Amino acid sequence: MVRQDADRREGRRTVMGQAENRIFSHTVTPVCLDFFVCVIPACFVLENAMAGPSLVVLSGPSGAGKSTLLKKLIKEYDSVFAFVLSHTTRNPRPGEENGKDYHYVTREVMQAGINNGEFVEHAEFSGNLYGTSKAAVQDVQARNRIGILAANSQGVKNFKETDLNCIYISIQPPSMGVLEKRLRGRESETEESIQKRLKTAKAEMEFSEEPGVFDAVIVNNDLRTAYDELKKFLLEKIKVKESNSTSP
Ligand SMILES: Nc1nc2c(ncn2[C@@H]2O[C@H](COP(=O)(O)OP(=O)(O)O)[C@@H](O)[C@H]2O)c(=O)[nH]1
Ligand SMILES: Nc1ncnc2c1ncn2[C@@H]1O[C@H](COP(=O)(O)OP(=O)(O)O)[C@@H](O)[C@H]1O
Image 1 (tube, rainbow, N blue to C red):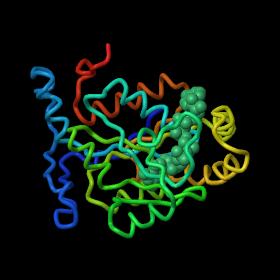
Image 2: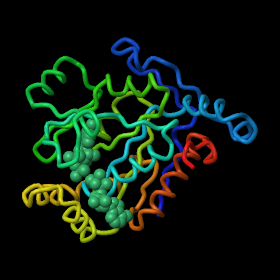
Image 3: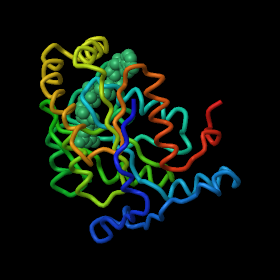
Image 4: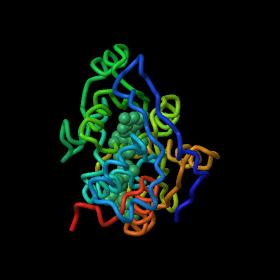
């Protein structure tokens, strides 16, 4: 199930940070390519897609399926989307890799980076710091991709304070019961960590109800359906034809 808020983004121009940070100083052209999308080659479509949003921000409670969905999207559309590698002070989970899932850093190192103006935004979640560095956004932009990342509600608020041209999508679980089951099923958290995540889940879920915050709210019940909804919404937004995907 997908809920779309008013299309407030088409025609918006990004002028953020020319003085503060030149990586955001390019101008974003409005996307109005419905006709051309049908007839021009993939490279042109991609080039014009790059004139759209800089970032896609997925938010929602821990365990809702943000990482699962964004990984699927990047896998299928690796010529369009790229993961924005956040920093965190939390420990890596089994199977997670430094430089692939997060930059895992100490609080001291991260705080020093924040103080030094190296972060676009940062937030505290469940006893740890998380943040998006300017370098991480720059890296994605240099590869001519639309960045995609997960952020908590504070992160969404932070991004909205910038002039970055973001699409905000809330990923919601079908119910609190299902959320808890998924968090436990992931087998990544201690009981204490699960409790902390469940405690903040209600607020993260309620945040999706605030008017005008999200461009779309997707309830991740059946994964395939939720993924199709996410894909359809984003590809329509950035005017990329599905057939331009690099996947088979
Ligand atoms: N503000 C902000 N939040 C982030 C960032 N990266 C991850 N998060 C959020 O931090 C929270 C915890 O992430 P994580 O520890 O990976 O746990 P998970 O949500 O249970 O998979 C989630 O809400 C993420 O969306 C970031 O760069 N900035
Ligand atoms: N639609 C779904 N149905 C069942 N399990 C799901 C679904 N979406 C995600 N999961 C599982 O739920 C757990 C939490 O998903 P994850 O992507 O880690 O959430 P988040 O990144 O929002 O914390 C993972 O074990 C994942 O495989």
